[in-house]
Length: 105
Image (cartoon, rainbow, N blue to C red; front, side, top):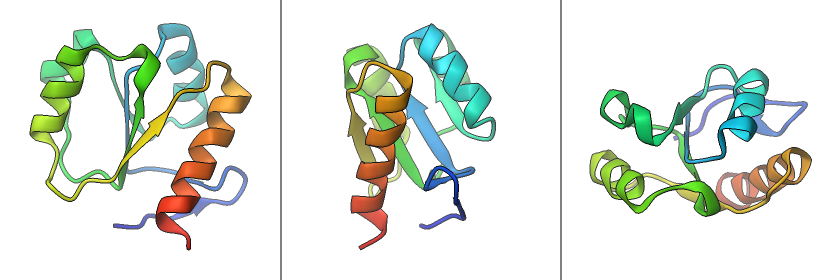
């Protein structure tokens, strides 16, 4: 499933589920991408995982409990994109790269 891409970031404006992340970093990401869905351990049961365009899974900052719960709720054909960068510019660049590799070929 493809959504409109914000030209300045090469990432979709909406339809993204962001899994994990340090609270300070996700706060900055929420400001940059206000229409994305961000999931943390304390929000698991409120999480809507229905049909996201893509899931960014921040592997360094995500519990196994969260990962298993969200994976069990995702559609079988969900696109899960793994990211590991530890500062905002590098994280956004990595998200752009993996998103483009997955959806724009």
